[in-house]
Image (cartoon, rainbow, N blue to C red; front, side, top):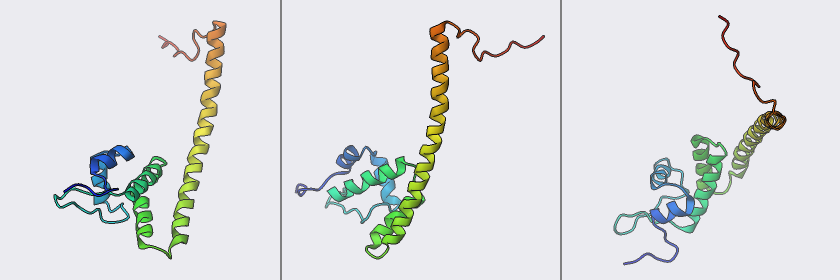
Length: 140
């Protein structure tokens, strides 16, 4: 007996999402899916397109620094269905603010690094790079 249309194996979901099979099992153990993942008659997990879509969102949230605990809470709220949209929005707004703060910090770091790159490029171009920020020999 074959798979029905739209059914995906764990390997296919891993390929579609970039998550390892181990990570998919972790997501299931941590109750991060929106539904219990059904099993085939042979005991293999059977995913659907909506599971892939959800995992892609989870990947993006994790890549942006959302802690697993927050992701679990978000999944719990979504699973609960209508009526808690304001809580979901608050959770997402808080994460959005955290991401914006990280981006701001990274931009500040990038400005400093870019300044140093420009300074070193000038020293290399002008032949004056020797000794730039070299350690001072110990005085003896």
